[in-house]
Structures are given as structure tokens and as C-alpha cells.
Image 1 (cartoon, rainbow, N blue to C red):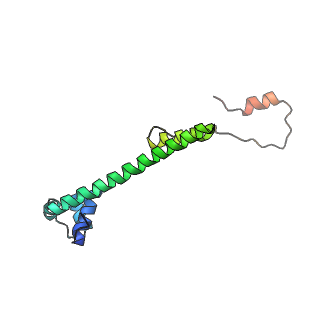
Image 2 (image 1 turned 135 degrees about the vertical axis):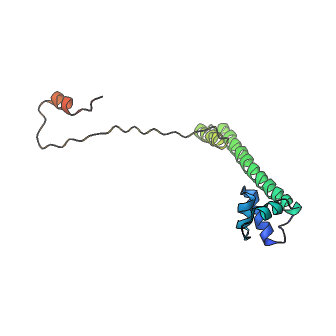
Length: 137
């Protein structure tokens, strides 16, 4: 189904396909706010068909993209293993895990609250200095 002839109806259908409420899509399409009119328009056969088509296309595009990326990463991994390039194979495996949502990046922030002591005097007794200036746990 091609785009709807009425530009406002097309915009309304696109906004509905994005997940907006009928009332919000109605206003986004350029109409005056009217919940009842938005509700009526959202049940129009052409609008319903167009929304379904837009959503189907988006789902197919997303699925194909994810699927093709997974397949390509798999091919890279197989080629890397065949060439004994294990780091490249691990990188491809990591990419596949990230695409599948199975890889979670974590980072740790080890804030040690380091204190710096500046003095012009030489340190004669290192042990005494460390006892005085070391963080207390």
C-alpha cells in the first residue's frame, strides 16, 4: 500500500505506528485537538491498514538488520578461526554476544580518595610518616 493520498492521514498513520496515542497523533498531523475525532479516524480502514504496513516494514527492516549482522559476525568468526587469528575470532564472538543482548559492559570505579601531602622537609622516619599519613580503614 503506498502512502495515503491525504497528507494529514498519512502523518496520523505514521505517528500511530510510532506508538503515539490517537489524540497525540491527531494533533501531530495538524488537526485541532479532539479525542473523539482522533478515535474515529484511528478506526478508519485505510488508516488501520497503513499503520499495520508501516509497522510490518519496520519490524522486517529491524529483523533483517539484526539477522544479517549476526550472520556476518559468524562468517568473520569462522574465517578468523580457519586462519588461526584467535583474537579476531574472539572479537567476532563478542560482537555476536553484544548484538544478541548477552554481553553487558561493566566498569568499576575504584575511587581511592588519594591524599597528597606536600612538604619541603625530608622524611627521616618513613614508617612514622606512613602511619601518620596513610588512609585509615
